[in-house]
Amino acid sequence: MELSQENLITDFDCGDNDLNEFFNHDAILFQNQSLGQTHFFRHKETKQIVCAFSLSADSVKTFLLSGSRKKKVKGFIPHDKSLQSYPAFLVGRLGVSVAFGGQGIGSQVIDYITRLCITRFPDLGRFLVVDAYNKPDVLAFYQKNDFAFLFTDEIQERENLKKGTTADEPLHTRQMFYDMMRSE
Image 1 (cartoon, rainbow, N blue to C red):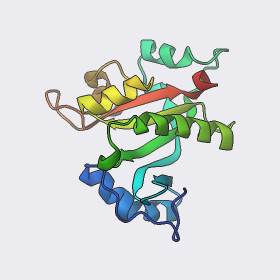
Image 2: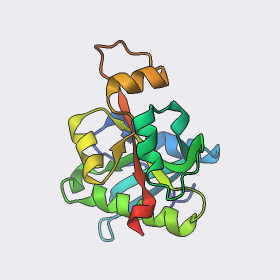
Image 3: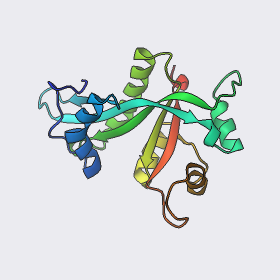
Image 4: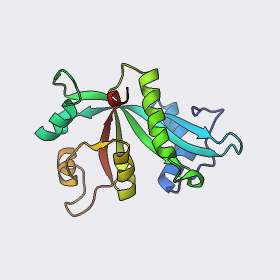
């Protein structure tokens, strides 16, 4: 179901305060400003929100990548078209209700997002990208769902994106990507 004034999210709890705040309060504001589209699923019987996610336009910016990482991304493109960036869809937020955690719903949502993008916008983006929370369980989830890191390590990501943390501070998020053409 797509978020709208008639279909708001007000009672979502995925166990992360930042995500809860976004889905319960900010998602409709972002959508009204054309900054992203939010979708969610309700349980058929209880009407409880099972999961929610937001999508917006983005790109994989190869001009920011080192030579080996750039080759990795371009390796997915059959005819080496040397672009500065490749169109992508940003999974801006994704959360599964604590009541439904551990059931594989997150992976099902990634599959749904891929099918949605390929079906609804077949020629507008090649990749899914995410700024994943830099937490072992979150990174493992995306890796399990075939996302790869855009940068080899945090040092490279920090330097290339000019992120403001010091070398001994971990990044808050890590950029990851997934090639949707692998799903077809």
